Amino acid sequence: MASLYLHIPFCEHKCIYCDFYSIAPKDSPNEHHALVERFLRALKSEIVHRAGEERFHVSYETVFFGGGTPSLLSPSNIADVLNLLSRSFTIDPGAEITLETNPGTVDIQKLRDFRAAGVNRLSMGIQSFHDDDLKFLSRIHSSDQAKHCVRNAYEAGFENVSFDLIFALPSQTPARWRSNLEQAVALHPTHISCYSLIVEPNTPLFRMVESKQVSTLNADDDAALYEMTMEVLTRHGFEQYEVSNFAQPGFRSRHNGNYWNHSNYLGFGPSAHSFWSDDQELRNAKRWWNISNVVGYSERLERGTLPLAGDEALGCSQLIDEAIMLGLRSDGIDVAGFRKRYASDFLADHRDRIAELERDSLAVLEGERLRLTPKGYLLCDEICLSFR
Ligand code: SF4
Image 1 (cartoon, rainbow, N blue to C red):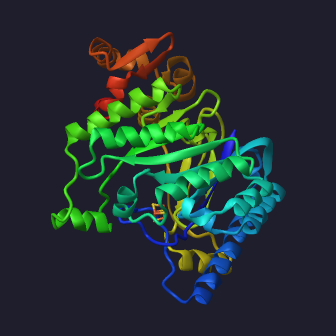
Image 2 (cartoon, protein in one colour; image 1 turned 90 degrees about the vertical axis):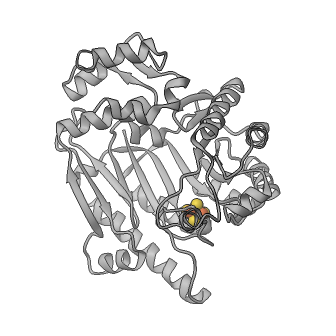
């Protein structure tokens, strides 16, 4: 099964911590509108171009509109793109179709129209239920707006709603983060992603930290909040199926799952990445990515060329390293499947390291699957590196 990703590179305003490629309107509303229209024409032409390649004629089980803020587009824009995708590729009738949604950009009618356009899953960028956190993060919505948006989403017919939350904000107390988790759970999402605030280079937040205007949470406090996250969410029936992702049974993100198990995916739009191999054994695996510039992206497609920024062929050892890292970060490594797919005996190659992890209660071997424990997830990055 394969996936389609569409990167919509527009935001109403750029958040201080964000390093995803997106732009906020700088020009007059008319000029910005013209740029959005130009981008949409280019996006459609990229889809048509890729659909002309025989090898991409497979069945797609997920479509994900990410960004940026795809919910800034109109429902008819989303419907147009989905219709084109359906005409160009085979979309599975039960496909998971996700729209990243900023609570400050939608009302109930717009949500109903997104649902009617075919979107069946919302990924809401809520981040916090505290207005001063939202102000610090320079989000455009308030806590009340977020809660209202969730209720509207249910009212509009969405049965699969995921929340994104951010923890480890400067001086965030455990009580405050617990209250965020509890308010999230009380709204009954099917899925919650919790990310620790990362200070990315070239962001306003980075400059604030550099100039000591803001100090980040120390590693121990960050770890304590993460432990609390695992404890609270699993107690409320969420399964942790990746280091940052929690789902009610039956609601794991199929799209992210495909990224994590080396399934094929095609990405469209500026900065979008794609991964493709010929078969289950990952022959001729290749990754490529688009330029991160919406004007350049549109110009290239207007000239009839693909907007590629780079590509790489993935050899056996790189695929194995990635599979170990992706498996440990998510649902574990299925040893038999690993042997078949990567022609490599994971257990034999790492016997001592695995024994050490088991002895320290950082991982467990359940039948044929090695997975990290909650204690292991806390040290996930170091553990992944230790397999290199
Ligand atoms: S809304 Fe999302 S994509 Fe846009 S700037 Fe904020 S964090 Fe980045």
